[in-house]
Amino acid sequence: MAVDNKFKMSKARYDELVEELNYLQTVREKEVAELIKEARSFGDLSENSEYDEAKTEQGKLYSKIAEIKNVIDNAEIIERAERADHISLGSAVTVRDPATGDEEHYEIVGSQEADPMQGRISDDSPMGRALIDRRAGDTVTVHAPAGDFTLEILAVEH
Image (cartoon, rainbow, N blue to C red; front, side, top):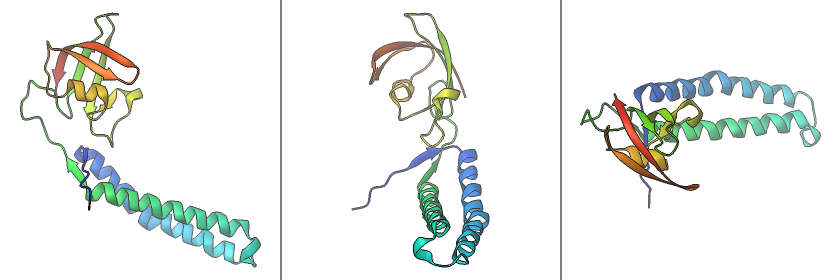
């Protein structure tokens, strides 16, 4: 039974992954093969730490290539929102915490692009789920692991 997981992302993120995959399969794979070849030249493989390290690096590389291929194969490119006044993937949102008055700016992105430290939150995160499909003027309650909190949506841009 196959699980059909889609990875939501922008076209730019998809292109970055394709570029990274191409680099890993061409340049990096040749570099690792050269490391293995060089390590073999050192003699007895049973006590050859350089060979062991090179083979470990090769395993990590193949694992990373498989992971990126899976993401690319299951990518769902997100386009502009159907309803311009509602929050969706790609929306820039300004919110205020009514308890403190603090304002924050976030961009709603797919899980492959999330970087909370840069204000890019996933639509799958508790805050992302609370904001999706809402609009400026709404008040939402975010059900986070650390506890519930309320946000007022001040502005939505696409």
